[in-house]
Length: 224
Image 1 (tube, rainbow, N blue to C red):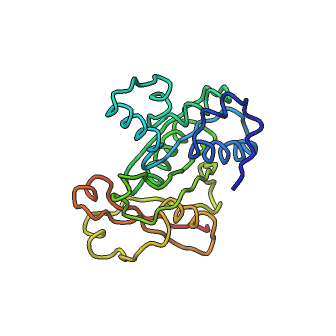
Image 2 (spheres, rainbow, N blue to C red):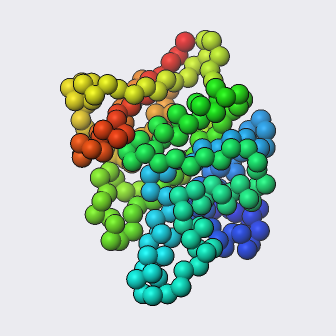
């Protein structure tokens, strides 16, 4: 897939890794449809730019000096920070991660900003497969993806969706346990795009401690 990032200065474009290029591309495409050019953005990613972090660790093991620029680009909010600088945006730019529930964490953060007075908030969800030797930790299908949506509080009678945390007892007994065919981030995108899908459950973590940390979530569509 070829991304058109010609609107970004060449020097800044060279600093964008593959994952950053995907994320920035979808954000700029959605930003063009927003009511305002400077709006809050929530960046939701389970892993962030793990390739850059791993490269720094390898340099450290080899005894090589670490680049402050490389470190700044490797942190979890590095992609969001680069985009804010590129666009000169001053609104809130928040980066969240929550294991299996990164999309849900992003939407909950966006709801907080909406209830704080923002007219609309962009949520961007992105991830890439973990590089070796971390790939053994994958517990869902490994695919690269990036998508962005504009969220606003629904008016009475306007279609939308609800998102709620499920009680622990519900997680254990009532929620279907199926093998996912997509990363959860893409399952959420599929739910948002398909009006006929009534609900979506977030996946359950394999580890009990991880499940206790993220819980499980239910998305439900509202047509009235």
